[in-house]
Image (cartoon, rainbow, N blue to C red):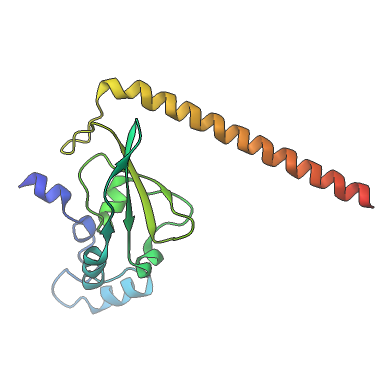
Length: 168
């Protein structure tokens, strides 16, 4: 029973009164939630139904999947950052343990990109010890690429600034 509860959408657990599920006269709470942009329980449930999960694909370290959420859901998702597991579960996205929201698909804002280390235990989210070194090496490589990209962007900006200065 606990495993089923852990994988269920979390949006009803702590905010049931805020989302209009608290019983009694909650018209004031429902109005406050609507004003704050928090969707009601029926809207959240429909988003969960409409969410589409791609097949998994992988490289030598991670397995990946795309999760396409309804466009209307974008108004409650954070902008400019990825979500922690508890956060995306609270929004009704349901997958086994260990998945990480690592990026957004730029051309389509409603496509969220997830990954998890190959061999991760779906019940606990535990990563196999033999994969830890590979993950660390990949993270170092990505950090190196980010530094190189930032350096190129800075060099390009300096050249453009110099060219503009030479024009005047």
